[in-house]
Length: 209
Ligand code: AP5
Image (cartoon, rainbow, N blue to C red; front, top):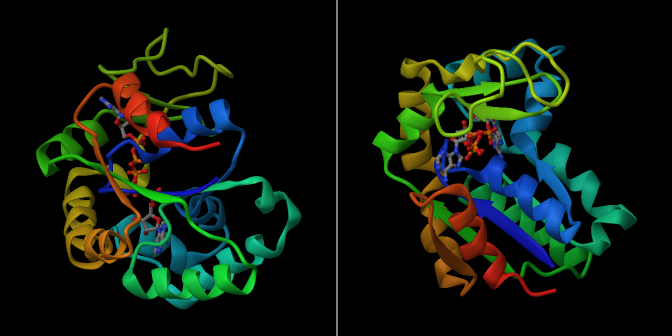
């Protein structure tokens, strides 16, 4: 099973990816997580992420394509945050074709921008990868990670002005993928405004193993 999670910032892609990986044991590829790791050493990536802009397509594709030749990808994967432009989707097609791999479906988790802003403003993350929301998914102890006890912080790109920029980048550069994958007969609409378990239910019903 090979799937893509598509949706605006804050739609719940990361949240659902964790649940899908746990239930279906697929490989999770999150380009956002990769770039957050890389940004500690790469100033240019750091600046792009902090300002809410996309990393250039060529750099993204270079980074992602090496994963598809690896054996462990053959047991199934979930792409989260990639592709994010039509150009990335076209390049992905070429890579997949050369490895004889097919995408089964693209889950489009949709929410309105007001909800995205509300969710992102309340998100708190830990360096261990755990993610919370101050009201929807609070940690047991304020500011402290349930998993490792680490300090919870706000992501650098989660400040309100940056979030608005990310949403406008999404609208211009990523939203066209909805039509792209719809035309390819791969798009499955998911109502992202429902609670986390309902969203997971909508997705898992459509996953074929
Ligand atoms: P990335 O990390 O991919 O960020 P994003 O797409 O903006 O998505 P988010 O991580 O903000 O949100 P999410 O949908 O995962 O929501 P989450 O589950 O956390 O990318 C970051 C940056 O990297 C980009 O801006 C770009 O610069 C760069 N980048 C990455 N990929 C790239 C690419 N392919 N090309 C170019 N550049 C790239 O949920 C959000 C909050 O809501 C959480 O607090 C959560 O607890 C809560 N929540 C989740 N679901 C629900 C629910 N159903 N109800 C209530 N609350 C919920």
